[in-house]
Image 1 (tube, rainbow, N blue to C red):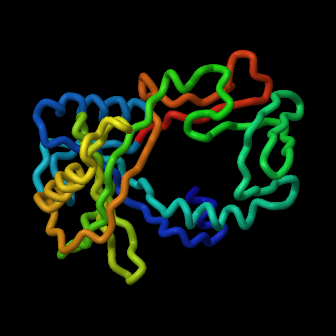
Image 2 (tube, rainbow, N blue to C red):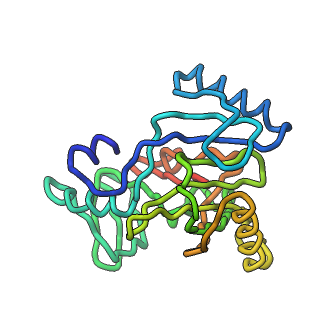
Length: 251
């Protein structure tokens, strides 16, 4: 992604920064330290730290340096402009309804039939599902607040360890300022109770840890989670020739 952004001069708010997985609890410290050791064995740029740019104390964190964040929609729109040609096409507003495995594969849509050597189904729950993936995944939601701070946004991207997960990072605003995003309140879709109460709890959490000037935006995200939290990536089923799946990335 970084090389494509640089090579094609894509304006997508790409920036290098550090990423942290932190804990405020002594109970999770051993897991944090084990994560650092595992990352170092894999040759990743990890370190154990007990302080971060966050304006509140932590017990410990895994720090990954030289990570990156960017605006995915801006990036993809620029990428789409360069894709058509040399056998590549982009079809928008097109609903796939049927799949035929083979060489080539055929995808029946509301606007005609597409042929391709291989097809990757990345539609969250696969709409063509001979392997019954729907029974091995569940959708989950979490809430996000877009805040204006009275102080400069802390450098870095953050996610907390443990079940009561929260995440933070900044995003450039259109007026040259920064929007500080605070995420949390994870729950299974359809089992979250009163969403308004969850937003209120998340706002209390945000105001308790950051000098919040105003809440500019709020929204909910939805992701699909597998039983063991490892995504399903590969052949759609053992009998598939050229059909593949990529789903269950969680959040």
